[in-house]
Length: 377
Image (cartoon, rainbow, N blue to C red; front, side, top):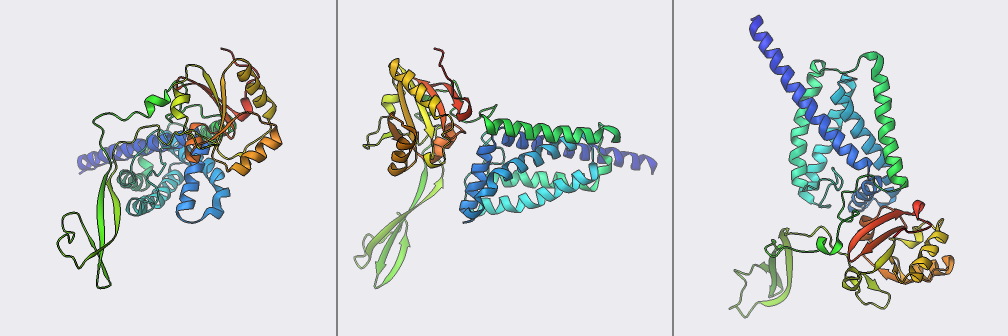
């Protein structure tokens, strides 16, 4: 009997330790990649609010981003360190009990294609996220039931110190990356990447697969048909409309929706990306919300570019009236072009921010607070 009990305890220990490590690693990774890109996480939370028509809660997006990353990272470290075992196991279980049904809803309804659980570091589908959460929920239940079996790395004397160090560390990372730029850039617009190459679609890449539905009407009754059974030989049916539904998503290049359009409506994307000369791109996805605290430095960079024969363009998604207002308020003389709002927010997490490219390759990026006085060639 004692031997059986010993074996059972050993098995329980292995199971709970495996579950603890799995949960800890996932929570630490998830929390960290969100912390290094707090604005990206805030944009994702705003997407949720928009999908649920709760835009009035947008003011909570940024604080929610900080809170989510700090909570996940701290819980992950506590699990790995085995400290505050009871309260940590309860909080982790509550998180998974909330996230699992939520991700099931996302998988079924699909209001947002990417849940953002791992930021831009690892993009998975909503169904993959749900399956992942099923495994994590099971692990959370095990840790909750057998939390006393967890190995602890710190004594009671040092556990509060470990907790506060972890929390302050991750909050500090988030604040730094929010103030400047992410210390780790997982997006396709990181320094060193070539934008043109990122837009390239391989020859044998899978295309999107759509289901086409034809709507016909007969004697006031409308009916839907597919390509295989539409009434081509029955003259009584009158064609009304078609509908297309995406069945399978094909290959999408890392860089998409990167289109530079002049105020006159001309597409100059290829011209800019193929230019052997340096091009400064001042990126302000919303001019009406952009900081003008360093406008003098921006104007100096424009003068520097003009003197040296370099291109300087401001990319924005703002309306012509807002562009005109920015020009009047800042004395801007540089040309303005438009681009997709989401793309601009993806390129640089600063409004405004400055990016230097040459022949499509990203040479450097600067946030508004660190616009340089002088560019070294």
